[in-house]
Amino acid sequence: MIKIILTTIIFALIQSLLYADVAVYLKSNISAKNNLTVSDIAHLDGDESELVKTLLIPETALKDGYITKNEMYQLLKNLVTGLLVIHGSAVKLVVPEISSNADSSLQELSPIPNELIITKGDFVTVKLIKKSIVIELIGKALQSGKSGDEIKISLQSGKTVTGKIVNNVVECYL
Image (cartoon, rainbow, N blue to C red; front, side, top):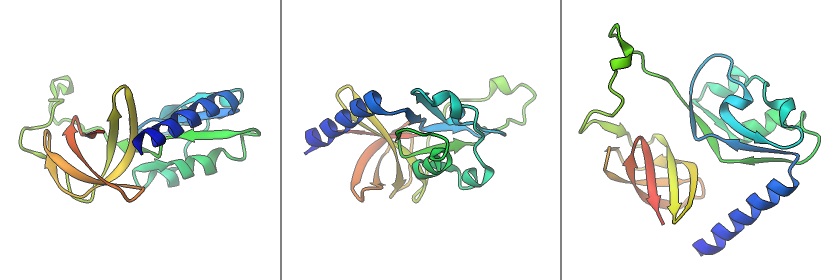
C-alpha cells in the first residue's frame, strides 16, 4: 500500500515538474516577519515564477500561524495563466524568541531537557521517512511530549501515526 502511495506521489512530482507553468514547494516552517513574500515561504520553479516571487502575503492569511496550500492557491490563481501546482500542505510561522540578555548570540538553541516541546492539540510538522524519501506535512498531536518521546499524531487524511520528537519535528519511519 505504501509503495503505491509513494509511487503515485513520485509520479505526480515528475509530472508537475514537466508540465507545470509554476511549481510551488511550500517550506515546512519559517520565521515570522513583516512583509512576507511568496519567495519567503516557498521555492518556486517554472516560466511564470518570477511574476509571483515578490507578491506579499496578506496579513489575514498569517493570523492563524499557518499558510495553507489552499490559501496559497487562492493568492496565486489569478496571477498564473498556466498550470499551477503546489506541493506541501502548509507553512508554519515560527515566532523567534527574543532573549532578555544583552547578548542574544549566547541564547541556548536546544530545548531544555524534560521540557514539553509539543502539547496535545498542537499542530506539528511531521516527517514521514522511508529510505531516502522524506515527506513533510502538518499533523495534530494527540499526546504531549518532550524531545526524544514517541507520540501519536493525527494526519489530515485521518490516519494516526506514531513518531519520535526530534528538533521540534515528529519523525515517523515507515
